[in-house]
Length: 171
Image (cartoon, rainbow, N blue to C red):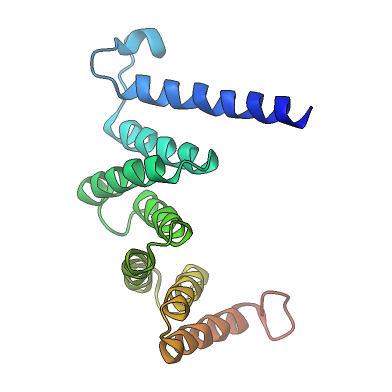
């Protein structure tokens, strides 16, 4: 029963992948996939690339996911800029996948970029910056850089405490 459910679940992921890839195919007439005369925009193409990577992640196909997410991140960065929400979302998922794949130095690079961009976009006391600091702390900790990790964990704690108070569960 569980096996059948999982197979059906992954079949739906495969259907989603097929649709996203079809939307990106320049040979496919877009008016057969969308309303007549509607063209898929550049933003939608970038979103499809991200969603393909995300879907492969959900299927635990990390090598394929990384390939699509790296491509998506590069395109998002070039077209929308480093601080756009979609770019940051792709970078966050890239970092997580790099960690799960044992590519810790790459994850550290992604987390450092995410932290730096977050601070410049949101300011030093934003919740997103706190999360980026926590992720960067994890990367430093895994790499054996415990003093650096502690500094970023402390920064995370300080921001969360300022935002929510000392008694909040996230603190």
